[in-house]
Length: 93
Length: 256
Image (cartoon, rainbow over all chains, first blue to last red; front, top):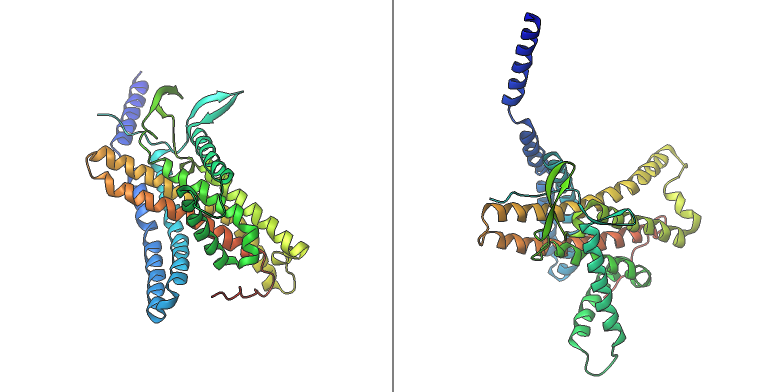
């Protein structure tokens, strides 16, 4: 009988430990999105910088440059969106 | 306080012959029917000269702007072939992106017992906020890219992927093959991520501070909706153009 009592005690401690564990899932969600936004942020800034310099050199070509700049933004932002989707799936599924 | 219901999976609202119809399928039917009725009614009363109706002028401005955009990407000969498909992507995706912002979408619904839990199921949900729709659009786009590649280059299109002249080209060919599939994934998640994240953002902002604060986020979502439609259209056109270019890459024609 003391075995049952000992096992029950261990089981209760395990449940308490799991319940008191820090919330790693929310931490993972935060880290996924935060780190995943670093690269694309710099990437979009670089695309924008290239576009600004090109427009500065050649203001007549502004609309052509603007169109390709938006395209470049979309590609770079897609990477951040992948990180966002991972974070959303972690949080809501 | 009401709880926040955010679900990545679109929930079924009713069943037809055993097939579950989700709220995003229902909304995409409504959008398609409205768009088709609008365009058909305009085309039946189309006027070539004289006083044009305002709706016709409005549509002509949009169609002409899009057509010039596609011509600047692909050149005027190929634009005639590619434009119907890519413009339809635009005219389907932009209303779909915006439909999640309408009052009533996401808030009017019923509660149901799903998997043993009481969930709130909205009747309308933006179609592009569901992975199934964006995946379908991406598959259509990439399959048509391959179709146009074969149509313009015949079996020589396969030389892009299976080029055994030297080991480097063979490796590049395999990379190209893998990148065709990764483009499907990237199309899907770009559109889904932008629109679903926008819906989550607005839900959370409205849940936290319902008064006045969500307004700039609605503006952001309107902007993002148009931009994502434009981007999907332009990227499809760019990939179709690249698939029909041929080896060496011709310069696309200079235009004034």
